[in-house]
Amino acid sequence: MDETWMVEVVHAWRFGTKLDDQAYALKMGLPQVKPENPLEAATELARIGATVEQICDATNESERVALWAIDQVPPGLPDMLKLHADGMTPVQISRKLDIPRSRIYYHLHRRDMRPNRSNSPELTTRQRKAVVKAAGKGLPFRTIARRYLITVDQVRYAVKAQGQRP
Image (tube, rainbow, N blue to C red; front, side, top):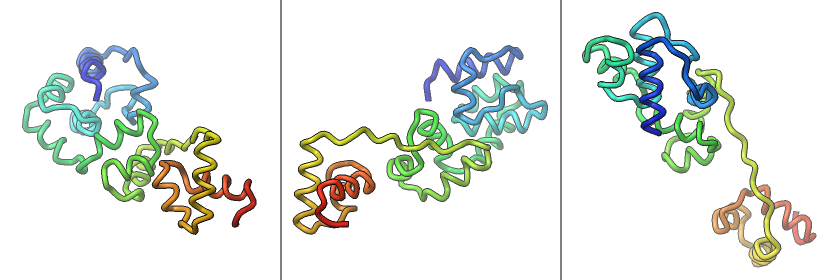
């Protein structure tokens, strides 16, 4: 989590001002305005990875409330939301954090957030030849995709374009 952004959130919620970076706040699933209920506000800050001190500063509540809010947040959720805000897809987040994709989709859906889609760059000629060669040796598409850090669809397309196998 970018510490300066978190300081800005705490300051905005403490004094009731607007955030400079509303777009990033939306990507993180943070409400545009501070919830009226202090417990809800503390929980929202805990979800994005705020510390006890930051939650206390932003909500003017006790440490007990901040600790309660942090306990309400599922493990790994702040990291997942950060990676999502940085543009990673659920598949990439799942691999990085070693959590099931279904959990990622569940938490994104609960916050009315859309999962990011993969915009894989086009394969270079060298990559395409290597993929086709590996497929010619009979390697499974998943193995080829993992080896060359590309998607299975890219492998399938490269092989189909060369006319080797379906």
